[in-house]
Amino acid sequence: MDNLHGKKNWLFMQDGAPAHTAKTTITYLEKKCNILQNWPANSPDLNPIENLWGIMSRRLNEIDIKTVKNLEKVVREVWKNIDWLMIENLINSMERRLKLVVQLKGDCINGYF
Image (cartoon, rainbow, N blue to C red; front, side, top):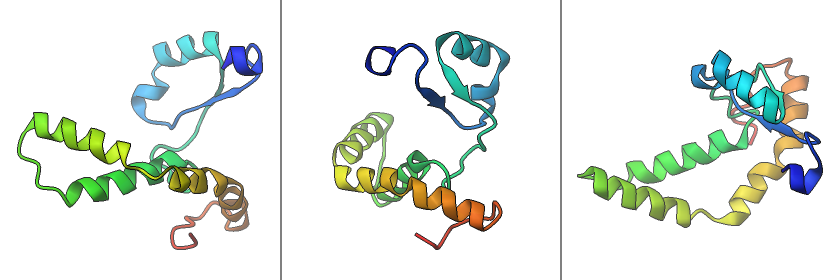
């Protein structure tokens, strides 16, 4: 990212999961990049990847997986078959999502999309 946008001229985003907020993690990341901190964990309203994980989870739940080896194969297949247009739509929905969260004073926007 530094090569593309300049040294620390970009923002690293991660949610507030405990592994992401550990002192050692934060210390390391502060040396490497600008961090957007205090982001809520598993916040699909504000993080398109959470929606993508949900889509993958629903697709995986439709498949009868019997072994760890089979699980690894199926996860790779499901990921490979994610439509890039869907990913672009999730990313492009961010401005609307943020505006709606502000309009709703932080309430969940589930059902608006």
